[in-house]
Length: 73
Image 1 (cartoon, one colour):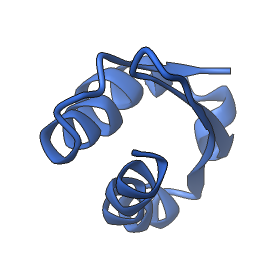
Image 2: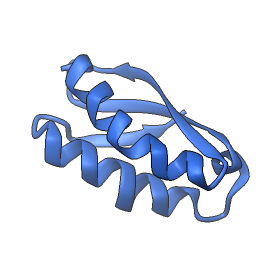
Image 3: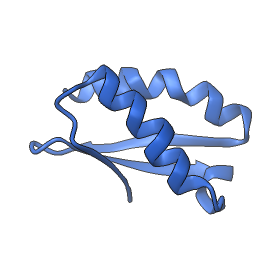
């Protein structure tokens, strides 16, 4: 499952990098929680929670249906 999540993140990454940010996969738990770290411009951005939930989580869930949630660590 971790490989599928990483592939989904690779689809999202160019958009984040275009705005000076990035996302790193930290872990995928056995209960379907993806832990990511937002870096660069995303790290302090007031819109980062929206990016996380409405962008990153949405894409990952669409590509890997077993994922329940994406959280920032």
